[in-house]
Amino acid sequence: MTAETPNVSSDEMPTHRHPGIAESDLSRPWIADRLSRFRVSTRTVRSWHALTAVGAAVLVIGLFLAPARTWASVLLASQFLIGLGLGGLFLVAMHYLTGAGWSVVIRRIPEAMAALLPVGLAAVAAVVIFYPSLYAWTTGEHDTLSGFKGLWLNYRYLLLRSAAYAAIWLLFARALIRNSRAQDTDGALNPRHRNVALSAGFTVCFALSYWLASVDWVMALEHHWYSTIFGVYAFTGLFSSSLACTILVAQWLRGMHAMGGIIRDDHLHDLAKLLMGATTLWMYIWFSQYMLIWYANIPEETIYYVHRQSGTWGPLFLMNPILNWIIPFFTLLPRFCKRDGIILARIAMLVLVGRWLDLYLMIYPSAFPDAPAFGLWEVGIALGTAGVIGGLILRALGRAALVPLKDLYLRESLHHHQ
Amino acid sequence: MSRRIFMSIHEREEDILGIARAAREAGLTIVDIYAPYAVHGLDQAAGFRPSRLPIICFILGLLGAGLKVWFEFWTTAIDWPIDVGGKPWNSWPAFVPVTFEVMVLFAGVGTVIALFITTKLWPGKRAKIVFDGVTDDRFALLIVEQDATFEPGKVRMLCERFNAVYVEEREEETA
Image (cartoon, rainbow over all chains, first blue to last red; front, side):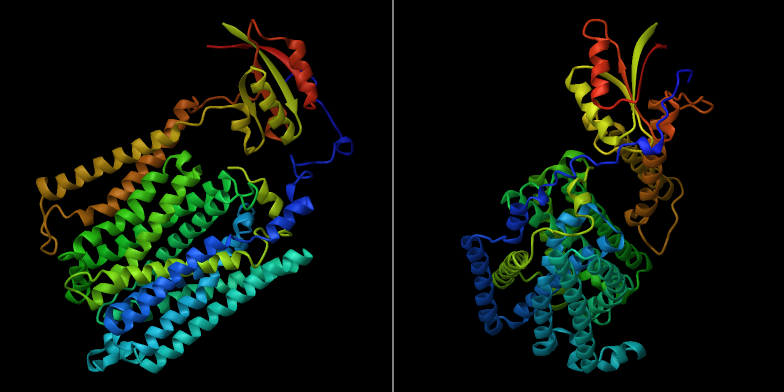
């Protein structure tokens, strides 16, 4: 370079300024006010409540007319709800731990999903307390259980463990959300610092407790069967379904113009990339479990897949990877599909249906190995679950500002670019 | 053959974003932009065409997976069948892990090679640095001077509007 290079001394440099930050919309009081007073129309709330009522009615009738199927459905619903609730907390914890800036504007959605946790826990408590015979090992066939399994699968000990899981999750959920909301009023940094520490603790406790809980509540349905990867498998379903739910709510809020364009295509794009990653992880773990059992070919392990691949279960078994991975993955490959709210919402819906099917295939064949039981009871309770999800998430969203108004990284998130 | 290049140096991210957008809107042809780090939104501001590398990556991945499935089928079921645990010779679940790995290998390594080819980054290629500062703390915008529409005075004014710290016109040899 022959030409003279400009030489500007540091004290002459103008102060560094990011584009548009000073003009941030949130500095205008009326926007913050609007975000704090998010209310859904009573018609929307009523339609979710109507779905819940339908589910409740089917549940009550089903308990008398078809108890086995109804209770299996309640267990399915409980795992679906717990998955979304814990998944929401897991997303929040991950974003705190990694110091993610982009996700601050969508953080209230996974926080709201944690409101599903108590309902899911109540449902699984009802199954364990009122219908333990869903778990064949409780009916006194103990003699065939080997040493450690015999000790572990003890009814009182199961109640104790279930209570411990519930206590751990609810305490973490309460603390994380309370700190996040507390920051909205005073803007202090302490709540964020406390939440980073809490998130670290939650992640470790969650990994261990969810693994054990999925073994206790789902894998133990077939107590002779054994899969060491089952906890990871259950987690991957939780991860992809909670991302799908976050995307659906985010897109719904965009459609409602509730947030004045704060959630942009760039935020959806990142959520879509996470969803692709999560569904691929699900497929990877699904196949890891399948292949090891197929390869080793030990009868007490293969029986799990023999039931699920024979008869009418077969097509459902094939549908599972199609819904949960093949369609989402290949649809979301092109960039424009990840940025299109409508396409993304449809895929998210598909992943949630896939999650239901995945849980159905984990739970139902243990009680109905010959042919799938599907009808009024399953549909009714699934609709009721959808009603509970919609109603509770909307209510939780109204409890705090739609965006963490005084978060340290809010501005970074508002100006997030892909 | 040679072409005339107009180079404008800036010190701030928002200036380079602003001038890239303004130059595109004024109908100027941006040859390239150099920055010391990846500036988000710069390619949209400059109107650069999205990279086609993802398509190459996808095709290479399919090619790798396809070739591997064919190779495994040929080795285990046709050329040298071995009985493993009484399973059929063409047992697809056993093919999946290796197929996955070879797909990733083809897609990953192939995309890097494709990037080197499209950017002409051969081994032994000498670095061509338009302006020393772009490796440190300066942003450089290069505009090609087209015969009819190009007015150096107006372009200079545009550069000054976005706080250019240094502007230069130079002749560049093109192949």
